[in-house]
Image (cartoon, rainbow, N blue to C red):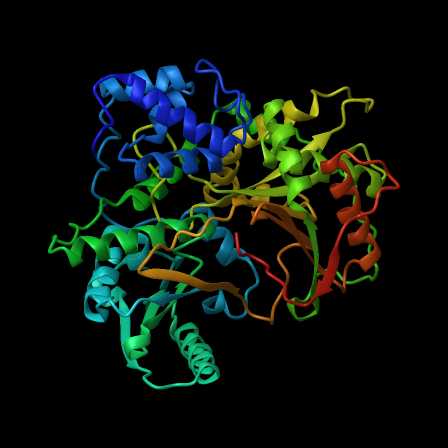
Length: 532
């Protein structure tokens, strides 16, 4: 990929601009550490993506080794190193990722139903046949899109298909339809694509192009969660458009991509097979598993039914969100860390316990080692790990809250190896599970560019089965506003309890007093359960 110049000054200017945009700071010193400024893995990926659009490739491993503008610019200008090592070709069975093991461990009555729908308007200039070739090339580039999960003697396993078998694309004529008829057709097509997904036999993603003649068209894309998590969607959209553009000017399609995700899964298995050090095992075993406070229950039920899940929505207005993000950046605190801290402090208040627990799901793009790059990969790569916190003024006199959060974040890969892949995983599965689940999705960005235009997207999930967590919190910055969705089981928790959690978390995020208004809210039954 082209560089901006032989001198690092151009790179310094580019990096400074992207860091200012991502970190929302105007005063970034060239020698300041990205992570000490509040940057996290989600924001690292945003910097990498913005630099890539400007013609500069930044391997995330190089970014982590050189986390200041000055050091990173010098390393990139010198070409040190050229990039991650090429993965070793996979031979034999492909292991499940920790997130995939976790998915199959849940009591899911209709696992085929967990998918994401993306719908985009397509200009009349787009060639539907060429678009089909671009979708095929997308499956060639990302091996996750070619995977299926049949059941064998040892349970679920991974099989890698050929791109032709893994890609389903249809072209449908929809000329002369009124707007309401188009909307109904799109809904029917999406329902059909969802119903066609079969995680055992494949494919796990389907696409249809509706041709509206001179008015253009509509692209409907449905992809299962097992092969594309939330951070994957932006990569899917960007790569599809890039591949279409390459084919449009007569370029060749890509050669099949290296099996990066499969090798990532293999490295996790190696980690689980004895490469987690004794100190880390002792750390996780020594967490206060049996001392964290429990939320007050409204019934004697032991599980929450999906059909009775409810969502409470909260939004911080744009000026409040901007003030929050800038104040966090000034103190070097990431938005995710602020959410964890605010939620944990509120849990302490609601439960009356100095020990609290929550599960935090992160984007999982950190490799197990530094010899490969996951920032532009599609897959179910997210990692969920417990966060058990003892407040500093408790009798145990633990480390400051920020240090506890950071250490457990740093050991999330090891936790996943132990909990989901190791020979002793039953030991970890027997530990009490946190009741609250937090997912920070970062800043939502529109990745569609002309001749494509985003229409809508949606998480698709069944309404029958067991809610994975009594309450899940999905946080995302949308159009400059921090939006929080609190999804909870009404057969476990009273609405008042969840409102107390939402109110307290919002007050602590904004630094307001206990009597401050809680902001706009609405409650509905449009619940997302595992859409991380």
